[in-house]
Image (cartoon, rainbow, N blue to C red):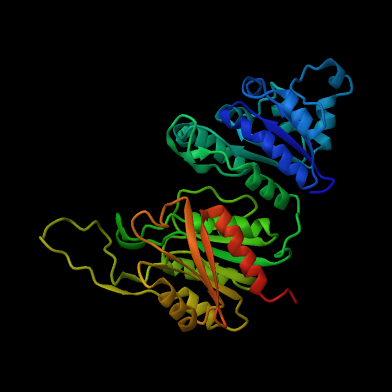
Length: 398
């Protein structure tokens, strides 16, 4: 980010305190940061801290006579290489979605040709509200990129989606959006994530407890490492990481078809998805009614995506995942060899472990008997460590 200009917009919300650290993190990466506060943000944080950290006077008014004598808002809009709004409140997202220009930050977002990126932060009910989701959909359609939100504890004492990503994570993603160089720069990678759903009838399906959080974190970490990332995702309730192209699927057969379609030109496949091993032999065309005391469901094997890709010509470097309830290393080593993988990341699953949790721990094995244990950590941190291991063992770009 050296020499890049980042205009950091701070809106009203308790997460605004994190924005001070974000200024420091962006500066550590070489960016020049100009902070713009909304009137609501000034109720939570002061300009002096941001001025000290950025080395630039904070802007907070569209009606500053000195700055606007030379059309300062247009000058700032042209100065920015990236407009980053963190936190982005529900109110600000709403105003941006309808094209308001009633304060300096909204006006800058309308007047700039630079990418606009927002890191939402609000109560989980506000995030889930239909109005907020409609505003978000409008903004994404117009090219605004979202970073998060994360799921976790909130200042109100509740928990859910709406927490702002941590400053280090936002800075890393902003770096990647500005073309930061990483070990996967110029390389295309595929990531599969989430569960699959195998239909029984029009209203029922066979699935599993995967939330997709680990896979989405891996996709985000690979993007931060410079990769062009295609994320093939089963049904999840997660925002797509910034800069990642996502293709949604439902069944194992659909996931296999998309993987095969996207595979040409890919250097790496990281298969975190919890793909169904079995599917119903037949699918009822109408809802099955409750008429008998027992119902037998006949299942048949699905096509193994990893084994299929590994057996193909010009295959990429393949990283599998193994979720096990017992004998984790033994089962993972067997899967690594049986499916002809290059690397496998294994974890223990069960009540309170891995599935739908914010943290995880991984045992990583690779060809030749190598192993590494990645201690329990938030999934974003764990994904970054895994990507570093993949980079160390994946063949260099030819």
